[in-house]
Amino acid sequence: MGEAAGRLWVVGIGPGDRLDLTERARLALAQAEVLVGYPPFLRSLGELAAGKRRVATGMGGEVERCRRAVELARSGERVAVVSSGDPGVYGMAGLVLELLREGAQVPVEVVPGVTAATAAAALLGAPLMHDFAVVSLSDLLTPWDVIEARLRAVAAADFVLALYNVRSRGRPDHLRRAADVLLEARDGSTPVGMVGEAGRTGSRVTLTDLAHLGQQAADMLTTVIIGSRGTFRVGDRMITPRGYRL
Image (cartoon, rainbow, N blue to C red; front, side, top):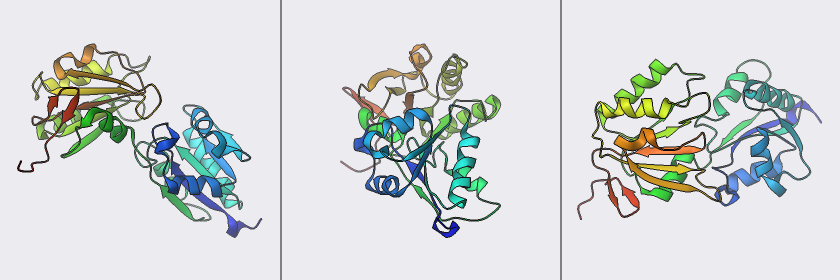
């Protein structure tokens, strides 16, 4: 196969359930000869990955994974890099595009996907109806003092806030620390929704408030949405009014 036939897709496969996979994503996966990704994400594709070569690397192997995808595309392969949620939201799109800056170019398409934040919001009601921010609590690539500064800015500006990567074995206290920072500017009664494995079978929904957030069980698959001053609860749903006159 000639070099001109090479092509690269960075595909958002959504939060986990294949019902949330877009038609554009299905088309890209169907056209690809090689699928590159984190092993659990590749396995989640089921029959959509049948008959295709796979290149998999574990957690921490993101650079190696994307570099290999670029090499394969430059050699003439049709390659899809699989990314959970949306590839441009804490996903692989930026890394792939950075690696493509130098050397032979190939056609590349970023295929959007349903994010953990929007999947979680749908299960919680309508908490993202007004301006919101998204912050990851992982300090593997971003120093904690930078994360803390961003949390303070979000709290002061009264954004609804979606938190990713809220707790792991190596970061057991980050959610509590984040809650303490937010409580400096936001009332403890602020509604909070927590969704474990949003968009997957067995999703877990917990409603609490900011004062009790740090005490809640959570892991790397938990997405937390913290309301603004205008957010309120109706039964088991959170609503952030857009401002329409009723």
